[in-house]
Image 1 (cartoon, rainbow, N blue to C red):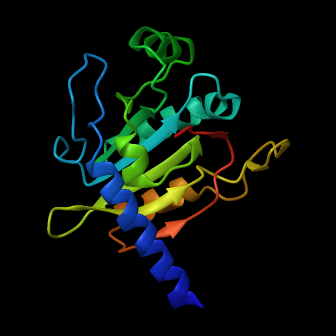
Image 2: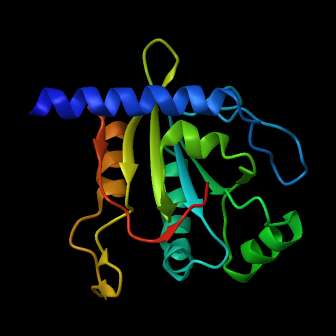
Image 3: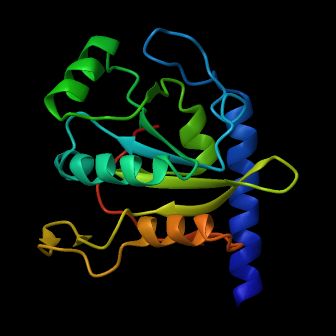
Length: 190
């Protein structure tokens, strides 16, 4: 059973890689196309997918800012990713200001990163670790923590902090197998 699930996951990731190859790269807010893997020298890259009108994603911004500050000194690069093709640069900048978002932003208009990572909702995190070969490998995909268990069902404080646990393990030099958790939030359109 475990092998079947593993093979399905590998197949899905392979298909999403092919899907991403036909799409335009994400852009920074100046309109420059960026391959975020080639443009980074970080040990770990965290893509956090956000949406302007997603209340759950907006509630996580202060926590994400704290994580970016805490882990940035250790070689972790955080990138906020907006994958709504209708969202203008001006609206993203306003959202950044309104919520005091303190990390670099990418516009994934053609959903290149959505396809590459496999994210489905906002907020959702995709964590890539630089391997010994220098290539980035996806090691975590999913929720930031378990504060939101389902739609309309949340707790004041999370019991599990998966994103933080993954980052701590990576910075401690642990080699992690791919892990996925179910994120609760606003669906990213095709």
